[in-house]
Length: 52
Image (tube, rainbow, N blue to C red; front, top):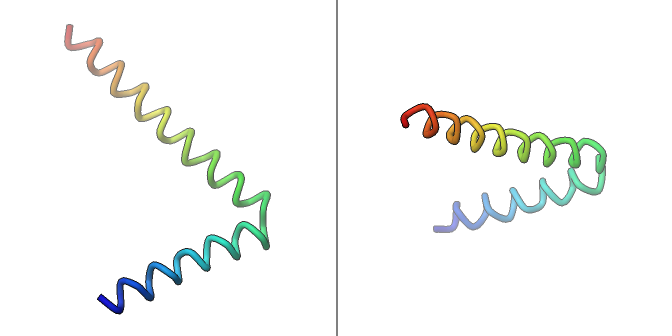
């Protein structure tokens, strides 16, 4: 339980540092994550359409 708490706070601290130290890189990372999600959703939609 204690390890999970430490890892959670460590992750939050890393994200906060990343946002403050390198905001352009952080924005690129978020943009990349959204692009990946949209591409996955598009691929799933194409798969479902090809089933019909």
